[in-house]
Image (cartoon, rainbow, N blue to C red; front, top):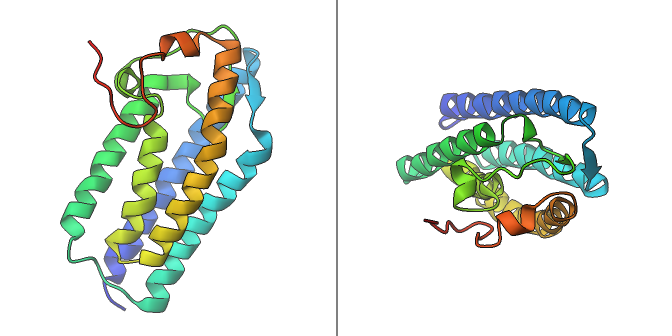
Length: 189
């Protein structure tokens, strides 16, 4: 089996990271709901969870079925992955207790526009888009990269408008982010 140790180490990191995120999301959810937060997107949330679980399974299966090793471009791909993780940490730290995997809105709370949110509306969704592409590409899992990039676009086409609608109804989101793009950074003065 080609590059088994790097694959297992990498998957172990990804699974540990996801479990840690779930822990913080649950803790933040409990705190936000105790403050009166409202939840939106309940119906599509289960599809997001399912997609992410199937993504990891598909990636693992493709690795083992086709026995692909690391990509010849692994260093460039890994640097893109590290960049995405740094952006994720920056985004999550910027939101603090307001970060969640669910759409939770605390009515009339201040809208956070610091960290990467100064430059784009959805840096963490940008990170997920990068991850869904680079994680499988690292081990040449091209089918997973293509399929889940398309599925992720479909999920985000529902998720982002729902989130923006909820934030727009219960906060000053639209006014605060009137000059900001969704994914591509717009450097503000």
